[in-house]
Image 1 (cartoon, helix red, strand yellow):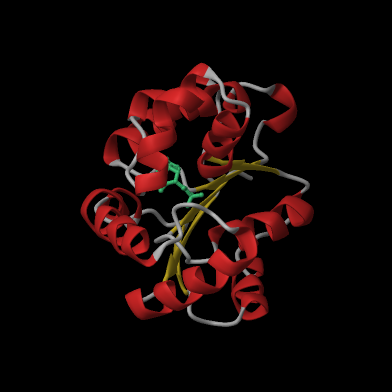
Image 2 (cartoon, helix red, strand yellow):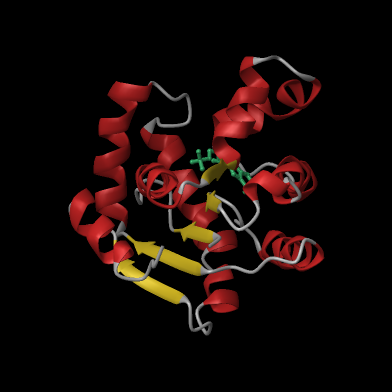
Length: 187
Ligand code: AMP
């Protein structure tokens, strides 16, 4: 079953993705992690994106669409994909539909982790002390939240009518969220 974890920065998508990897023996597809990896390895893409990443701006659809392609067409990962931080725009959502169709796959579940702005700020401030991400400064968090509201939140309309769309209160404790997710996953 392919799963999309949707929600603002700090909603807990990464945490639940890691749980789901174990649960369904799946593969986490975090475009954020992939992009950070490009920067760490100082690749051509890494050089292009470093400033926008640090500023909390979105990376072009073209770059992220390309990054996820290999995994979607990887037979080992077929129907075991856990999308974390993708899609983040309507054009990415349409691209995902297209690629899944071409590879004869579907989206099994979409989980929307709904979190308010104050909780996000609190959580990311905490994460800053642990992960030391350059885009977790308060000014950047606020910008990322605004970009999310403007570009990513509208993607909800694209998914929310699906029967397999589930909104979950992302302010709950991690294990409570996991338990709710579990009720929709049958493996
Ligand atoms: P994340 O680790 O998901 O919080 O993503 C960190 C940053 O990576 C974001 O603020 C964006 O700059 C970039 N990024 C990650 N995923 C995407 C995406 N699907 N589209 C555009 N930019 C992305």
